[in-house]
Every structure is written in structure tokens, then in C-alpha cells.
Image 1 (cartoon, one colour):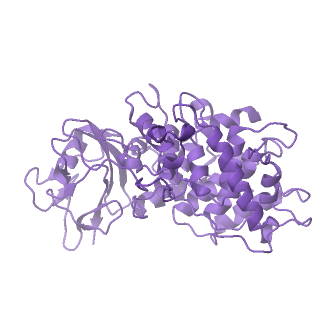
Image 2 (spheres, rainbow, N blue to C red):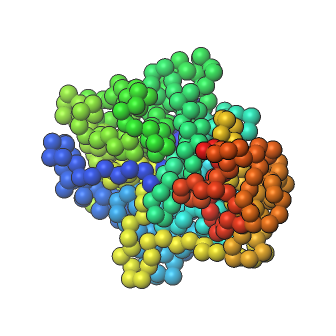
Image 3 (cartoon, rainbow, N blue to C red):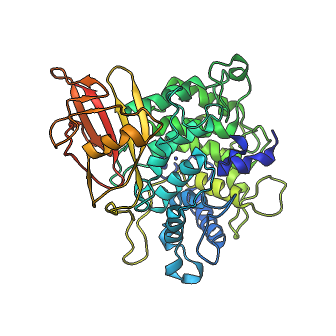
Amino acid sequence: MTRTLLPSRLAFTAAVSLGALCLSALPAAATATPAQIATSKANGVSYLKSLQAADGSYAGAGLSNEWAFSALASAGTAAVDVTPDGDSTKNARSVYRTLLATTGWPSATPVVTDYERAALNAYAAGIDPSRVSASRNLIGDIYGYWQTAEPGYFGPSANFNGTVFAALALGGAKTQAGAQRIPQSLRSALITRIRANQHNDGGWNYSKAEGDAGQLGSTSDIDMTGAAMAALCVSGVPATDTDITQAKAFLKSKLVPTSGAFNAMFGVNTDSNGWAVSGLNACGINPQTGDFLTSAGKTPVDFLIAQQFNPGGGFKYLPSDTSPSAYASVDGLRAVAGGGFTATPPVPATSGAPQWVAQSAFASGTATKLALTVDDGAGGLKVCSVAFTPTGTTTTLGAVLDAATSTATPSGCVSGVTPSSGTGTITAVAGKSNSGANTWKVSVDGAAFTGATRGKVINAGDTIALRWGA
């Protein structure tokens, strides 16, 4: 594979088929000072603003610049404040939200990474990913790619990056209140698969390695090691975990002492270094001290800042390049700013603009999707996207489960519900009945599990988790 394929990975097309934690101010011992980082951020934001099209867009057909939203948020700039020539009616957030809500988006043949990329960037732009519009629920879209035959994978397992970015999107794009919206059972399934794909050298690659001794023994990729580290950490794995420690050791082994760069599969470049640093950032690991301060006193952040044109603010892809690259500028800025693969949207500077925009209610008669997990308490986890056409501004849990028996993707998520009508307590799902203290319970958007009733009110975009147990 040549380096020219990497932009396709950045856009997550089928060709090769992250709120992530932001670091606080770096200590004085770091080689890039807070003042240097502040200057890099300010100039980098200016360059990314120059990439906005006249219609206010960053995203479009094919490879586009929508990853700018994650970088802008990491650098403290709200997408709603980014406008072409000061025209607030074309602000970047509103234009992006309109695109995501379009019936034909992303294409006639979408892949899971289309929705994962959108969820990470929508979140950073201040658009609730599960409530983009009356018809668009990006979390529901992602759930539809769960692999029933290989639980824990999203999309074809051969394209391991789809599972890594499922973890980044589902774990990193939290609720508006900052809560994990998906249940621990789903996070655990993702963690298990990511661990199983870790190579013997401590890193990861974009393709599947689980069960393949040859792949597990092959050299890892700097980029995907950063992404997989971040995926584990946003799923709840601590930075002290053995697998994270091994990944750190792999990255350290690739450091170039004289520059602080990582010697990636494609050679020294900004994109690979940006992904690696974002992985460290997401795990709360300072990329300017300890293992990542070289014998020559250089760090990966030093290298990234050295790749930046100033005052223009763009980053070059290769050290030998003489002009900036949009992709390198996004990856470089996000990493230098302390971001992972997404970030909590900043409070806008625009007067009256909210931090978040979201669909507040179902639109009666407008088809949508809801994200549902069903955990039988015995290790059997089912994940699906439920196609649903509401008849009012809210619906009920009973109505969603009834719909899931016939309109779930993948199918088989729910085979039956008892009782089949009314608003009372749910006593059995898929033939598994309540027994003593072990009963069916429900959680919405990561809230505490409570007794499941058919009459439980479900709102637009709710992420629903059903669980049997005490």
C-alpha cells in the first residue's frame, strides 16, 4: 500500500475498507511552550477557516474537509462561528447539518465509516449525532452495521478500521450532558475486538489481524495505533492498561530523536504524527514528556509545529513539501491543540447561538431510526438499528420493540415481547422471562437502568439499552 491511499482512510471510503480527552496546558518542561502552542493553534484555525467554501461548506462529495470540525473544536473554535465573509446564514455548522440530513447523503452505497466520520465531526460541530434531523440519527445508522456473526465488529471485520472508528464515535460522541450514551456491554464488546487485533509489536493496522498469526506478527501502522489507542481509552480503558502501555512502547520505538517525528509506514509525515499524538491525547498521555521527549530534546509536538507555515497556518504533509495540505493541516492542528478524534464543542462566540443543536421531537409520519441494544444477561448482546415511523412527537418502548421484531438491521434483534400490548411491565423479551430479582430493565442515553415498561416514553434520537438482570 502506498502513502497516497491515506487520504481515503482519512475520509473512510471503501478503498481501504473520536468527546476525546483534551490535554490541559503543557508543563514548562515541555519543549514546545504554551505560547508556541497558542500561536500554532491561532494560525492553524485561520488556515482552516480559509478552506471554507463560499456556500459555507466543508464537506461535499468524495474527499472533503469535514474533519476540520474536530480540529476547530479542539482548538477552541465553534463551527457556528465559522462563516464565509461574515455571512452567519452560511455558518459551517448549519450547512453541515443540512448536508447530513439530506436523503441522498452519504451515497447510494454507504459504508459504516461514512456515519462514524459524520458522528465524530457532528459532535465537534455542536450537532447531537443522534438528533441531526427528524430523519437522521447517526448513532442509529452506525448500529445497523453490527456484525451478528462476529459480535463486536462494525462493518466487514476485514476492514478493522470500521470497528475502531465505531468505538471512537460511539464512545467519544457523548450526550449533550457529557454522559456515555451507549451501554457498558457494547463498549466491552468493542474493547474485546480491539484488543484481539493488537499486533505483537504493540500497535495496530487498519485491517483485521485477529486469529491471523501472520498479521499479528506484522509491523503495525503509526496512524491506526493512535486511533486504536484512542478507541480503547474513550471506551473506558485506563492509560495504565497493559495494552495501552504496549502501544506507547511501539510508538516510542518509532521516534526519530533529531526531530521528534514518528517514522511511519509511509515515512515521516504530518498525518501519521497527528494521528499518533491524537491517540496519546485521548488517553491523557502527554506527548511532550517522558517516553516522548527524545535524547535530542525533541517531541512529536515539536515536529508538528515545525511542519506548519507561519503566519499562513497550514501544515505540510512531508518535511520536503513547499505548500500546505488540507488533510495534514487538520491532523496537525487537532494534535497540537491537544485533541483526540473529536472534541466537546466550544461555547459559541456568536450572540444567541447555542452550544448544541438537535431535533427535539419526532415528526409524525417521517421515517427515522433508533439505536437499540438487547443484553440477555448471559453474554448474548444484540445490537440493531430500528427503522421506525412515529405517529406523534414521542413514542413508547413497547412500540419500538414491536417495530424491532420486523424492521431491525441486522435482523433478529427482538423476536417477541410480552405483553404484546398495553403500557405495563415488560415480562419477557425474545422468550426470556423475568425471574425473581432478574427482570428486564431499560436505560436511555446512558441513564440508570430501571424497570422496563411498554409505556416508557421514548423521544427522538434516544439510544435505548435493554438488559435482563438484577
